[in-house]
Length: 390
Image 1 (cartoon, rainbow, N blue to C red):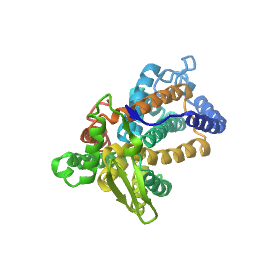
Image 2: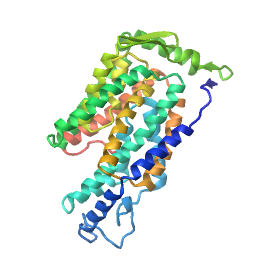
Image 3: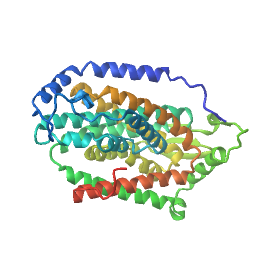
Image 4: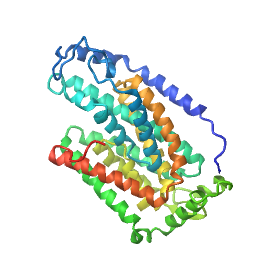
């Protein structure tokens, strides 16, 4: 039995309700613009047309895809679980669901010639929907992992401070200058390289260079994976314990193993990771994970929570920019159900990940990295994906 203390999620629920009330106050203008875009779209049953007599679907547009809510819920549970387990791929998997599985991508693309304005509105709504899913999973994961003693708060804060600057500068510099096919292809190659590097770390040679991480992972696994059901483990005695926290150095222990880092390096790392993530148009979790395992030298049991905290900061800034500044809205009948699924998946992830060996958490990341790398590299450079959407 794991002693994680009493859990009170009332503050979390209150924060979500307040956030929803804020963004909803900024949606009428965008809704009017959407109605105007719909009225300007050619009427009919062909591609790129809207049939006024058809039943309403996504964003209450007549003839738009009517997403199966059961599939949407189950997919959201999967997205919440995978992100909260490895600290990455939440945004990518959310996008696979909205764009491919639910058919919203092809639907939005159908208006590329007949009504580009509607095409862009649908695209923005899909992007923000992805970000809502990731942000909720990141918030829940951060809270859960912190309470379990599996989140390095100083490291997460340092990465987040650097990521804020990178997330602001890069869009300003590169907006409107990079072709879609270019950054999709390079994104795939980047994922390939990172996946290969993490795979190397699962080998005996790679693990020999991470003695502290291996020792901490072994201690954690012995306490949890090989746990006798009648034996209790008090995480308050074995989880992350901050020994020193200053601008010069941070030292902490995890299951009796000491780690340390200079805050300036994760701040710099957070800047470049967020810059690359902004350039590629993703959340950045798949970049923070290798940084935390390879550069910071942490075991995977600490990576998901620390990565989630950093991703959460970027998602909050992005959602605020889209919904409050730009007035973009999401389709609440769909995203509301998905957020419920995200909540369930994100609650399960931290509790199941402790039973998965550190090396297999890395290999799960590698498998996803290979799949995503093949998909995006082929789509970017060949114009089509050589692997199925999922």
